[in-house]
Image (cartoon, rainbow, N blue to C red):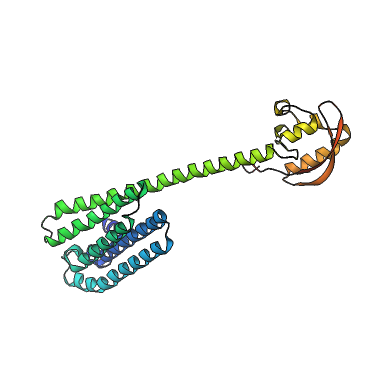
Length: 288
């Protein structure tokens, strides 16, 4: 409808040349949007894909039926009676009546569900229903109170839209918090596993400074606390005869290449040389 009105304002087309198309098309698109919204919410809230798919299939078939049942009749009728508005004819009754029934059906499905999400969605659907009910009342009274009823009906329709936006934003926020919480929990479990592993583990940054070591690594190198190591360069454990090999390993890691298992020579805290079997893997953080 907006596009047709815009064309009329620009002088591209006249009302009578487009109204026979725009009137039923506007009702069809609005009804189809309501069906998809309701069906999507049923799928999300109830987690019942077959039920939501069944609702949308019936709703969209009903929408298509309304369009096919009214389009040709309205096209001929509006051309023969250019002064008549779509809302004064039986096709308007059909669209608003079927739409109201579909909304009530969705509300009846959600009725037994509990929770804030269901409550907000019920309010939004109620607004859509009231909007259709008011339009039916307007038709029943012969549009005697159009100037009062139509603005109220449109207001209820508009008020339902921010509620749907609120549901989306609130759910996105909750899902993000849950994802962060789950990620944090997994990271904690991983740290616990690494910390208590029998094999030595260390993590260095791109500058070669230790960021994390576990208890086994501390014991292997003769340190009593991670504070003695974290923040210092890996060269504190580097044996003189292994300098070239260690530089090759670090170069491969900086190029995101894993190092194969190999025998390495390390220097402990007390200066003694120790021999270990080690493997090295790069860790990607923020794309680096």
